[in-house]
Length: 218
Image (cartoon, rainbow, N blue to C red):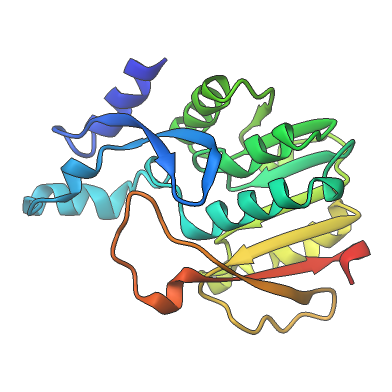
């Protein structure tokens, strides 16, 4: 399965490799991520084009996902015994954290088949039992808590918030780009410090992650 996932990555970056990575501030979880050595070079124009067309989001642990996973492990009572879904799961880190925190069921949901494979591989690496789903709207599982990290960067995704609150009793949204979410069903819970890994050298402002909650969190 690792070879299959690495082959998917190499369709975008032919020389890229995956490596098992420790995560800053989150020693409980390790992930298969893009080898940082592949980022320490100039990209050919065709590589840049492929990255823009088919970015391997799952090959990074984005700051908001890392922050949300840390918060879950620090506050396991919010997920223990619940049926949870991680929307836009990418590497699967949030779904894995929920499983480790005692969720009744934890689903990593992502349209990208490579992200689904990455979530499955990372769950095995961490001995966490999670489910895998593709199309969120086709997933009929009953959900108590819906979680999403870094989905608000695109304003076209904001209408999903209304659907999230109808789908689940509670929702947690972590985002490093939206500082003051204006939505009647959500309130800001806290601000978390984090970073993307491998390190992309993001500005300090993007290392501040806002955590919003709806339902019982309000």
